[in-house]
Image (cartoon, rainbow, N blue to C red):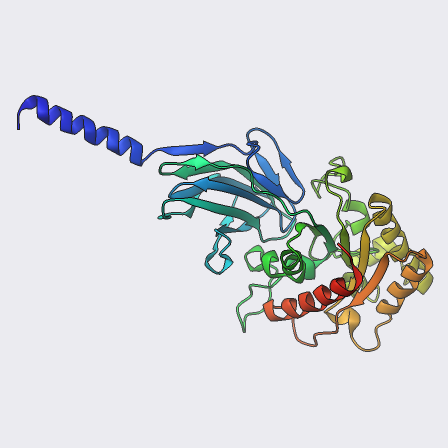
Length: 362
């Protein structure tokens, strides 16, 4: 082989190598990314706070990476390719900025990737963008469903313990949260609805296991920042589901807990106080969403066990509001240890789906 031919072959090989390794950078502020949930987006980064928040892209390419880090604690995610959650890649981001391979070896043609937050709202997960491998192209923004649903809840709704292996004791570690398989997310997907989830493990309406209560954070973008106010005009749900009072149920009978003392002093709240607290929170939701159907749920942990007065408190609060678009739906006590697992979450979803089918005209 002569010198000229050798040089030409080497140059061609270099060009081929460059083409094969080419990547398309997609910044977080790109308008072709479809976000769901309360997220803070700029040109260079997006912050995910709440469980169930997501980012979806349509693209042509052989693989996708994402650059991320997480503040406060690790944040856990699914990367779901072409809607196949059974093959979802679960990963966790920590305080170090890293590039994660979300998908590789994809066939030629069009694909969809959803980046979905699984864990609690106690991490701020910062997303710096995607890179798409191969002969890459970012396609038009995914169309979001017309229907919209929003959930306000505690650990049950957030997905606490859904991924705890059988026989293992719950620890509350972020890697065992899985919002994707909660009754809330399952219900939203069943109705092909946009999904917003405002939930934190341990939170209550009157008292929580920590200083904040839901009436103090429900209107925030960043749940840790009182000045970070959410613009409710950005998302107007058709259906709102509240599943709160489980932590109140535990803590109002725990006078030695520091948050009981902080909220109530040395005296257990009266039944009237409890009913008013729930009524006032529902009224605040109604003030944000005048036309929404509101479902006041409770369960499936021991706030709905036999003898519990808390379903009755909710019924009385709803009755006082005199609003025929506010309903109650209680999940039976599961009577098993720990938080609801996937099967128990699915049973809750089945009940809620049936209730919505009978009650709501979308």
